[in-house]
Amino acid sequence: MCRPVVFALFGGLVLSSCAPLETYYKPGVSLSLLERETLACEVKALADVPASTVVRRLPPIYVPGRKICKASGKCSKSRGYYVPGGVERFDPNDGLRTRVERQCMADKGFSPVSIPPCPESVAQAVPARATTRLPALSEGSCVVRNSNGSFQIVNRS
Image 1 (cartoon, rainbow, N blue to C red):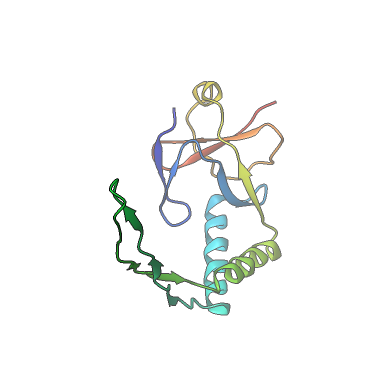
Image 2: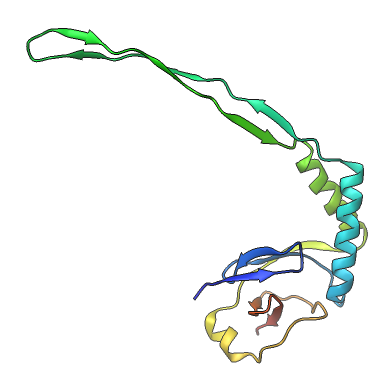
């Protein structure tokens, strides 16, 4: 069963226990070092490629009137109207900032990975522990999310 879990490693995101673990990875590294290196690269990327929020007004959309005819054959036309366009906010630097962060982490030997969640049978069979040092990954690697926000990487054979 999937349930939301608070995952504090990268900014307190709320993730589902069914979601894969998206993180940077370097076998043998402690989670505390991973957190320090990730934060350093996030700060570097933000300094190198600052946020630049752009606010853009979207144009209104005109909906033309309709011709309405009665059974008697008498027709009339309803008036057209405008639907407001709204406002759009985005950061055009977001993609480049992400690339700078990834390059910074790659320079430190980390690679982005996505580790799938373990099947329920595996999650219930392993003793509850938290991963503190990143193990070598294999094709059978999966992740168990603990209720306290920590996770455990399991290498199945």
